[in-house]
Image (cartoon, rainbow, N blue to C red; front, side, top):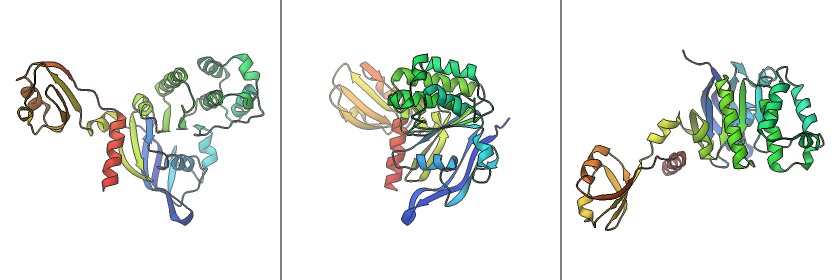
Length: 303
């Protein structure tokens, strides 16, 4: 069974003053029930894309379709089923935390107070915290109250721009747990981030954007395959570098007893070669999404 596309963009383009490119000819699709990562450096076009998806900016060309509806023409119907958190949160500062959640909850027929209580407990909010005005909150607390209001009405889709900014590691872990629960209950997430470990931890697929243009869209594990793995070997005895010549790797550094190389070919050949030597230690670390990300940026910069 093929999942429905919850988000689709067709040649989505936004130019700013003097034809400065925000994004250009962006076409992507996000399937129901997946967590879709949107990666890019600062200024790459992530926030512009999200603002277009939320109808906070109007496209210069192309369109965004959410739940099968045109975001510009039918945005009021669409937004009832979206939970949104921007990169910079500024909840109504003169409201208490409790009043803010009540106010936002009234905007959706699906607001669930029992679920809200669960969320507040997970994010470590006390009754006293909820009675305080939001302007008295730290940036981390303001982020947490914004996350609670994003989750509380159990939206069909969540659109998140740098959602863990300002959260401590414990609260980040809590957020990942909630995201996992949300997905298990059928929710869909579009999450923009420059925190690569965050995307690697929670996402099914990721898109990489550079200078307003999409350069890759793949499943996380497939993105990893594009990065040559690094092998590190420590020999028990000195080795002549000429004995390590092999087409299957590209040697990065070598001294008498230590080798670091990038695997470029058949690992079987490497194992056969290394079996001729006495080895003290060997490691073959899994490539990180950061390696993939930087690799794509280098490739596109050189084109």
